[in-house]
Amino acid sequence: MLIQYEKKRFNKDSIDKIEKANEIIGDYSQRGYILTLRQLYYQFVSKGFIPNNNRAYKALGNVISNGRLAGLISWNAIVDRTRRFNSNSHWANPSAVLQSAKDSYAIDMWENQPNHVEVWIEKEALVDVIARVCSNLDVMYFACRGFVSQSAAWRAARRVREKRYDGKHIHILHLGDHDPSGIDMTRDIEARFEVFGERISMNRLALNMDQIRELNPPPNPAKGTDARYGSYVEEFGDECWELDALDPDYINELVENEILNLRDPDLYDEMQAKLDRHNEILDKAITEADRMIYEGEDNDDD
Image (cartoon, rainbow, N blue to C red):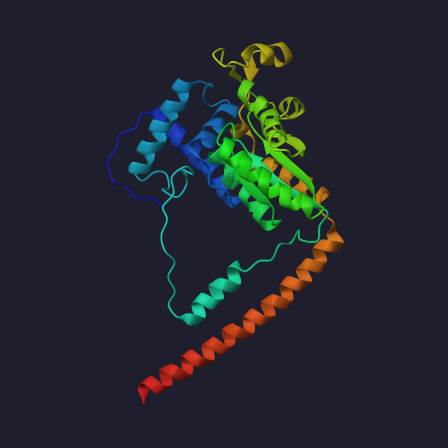
């Protein structure tokens, strides 16, 4: 949605950035993604349009902000996933609420599976990237927001304990930056589970060195102030890489493939058949509600 709120004058470099931004935004939009500013920035860096430094990031942010105010970039094109509004739900009539209930109705598609799977991602700004595949496959997902808090780790340990008592094998899939802290976060999650008496199968899906060699995302200098800097440099060198730089389709494919490897397709089909039967019942309830509403409106006219 292009809406002009202010008149702006742009130099040639800014116009060029706006045009490139719209090309990237259009490509992602066709694939069903909305970018964060950080993701857009890494697309500029990976394509060699701008250098990879904080000054370039801020400059691009200013151009994008002014481009939106000037009506040159859609207001729907960039999303801030860290700030959300909440409101109550409303419906036009009782039939509509039943339809809404059917649309949101779900059963645990992993109830009869031998594995319990969760996907944890370091950054809240990227949680919507994995939301599509996780929701479609009925797998829990969680934004750690850096190192996971003690409270969140305790609640997770209690949750997986119940699953383990049901005979499930626990699998946590983790995605994070490849930097001194991001690498250590995977170890930290596993260690926190052990503190609370739970042993889990921990799988770091990304970002790993084999993926970095394959995809060649833009590097950043590792932060020398990070307490884990020395051990990181010994193993990986003084460069680091952010998860934001990966294409969302690549991230989704990683997650989807690993989840499907852990899911029994025949057991899944059993649960799908059960869900279909339940939806048939809800369809009948909606039809009956429509009939009652229609008859009530007729009586009101008498």
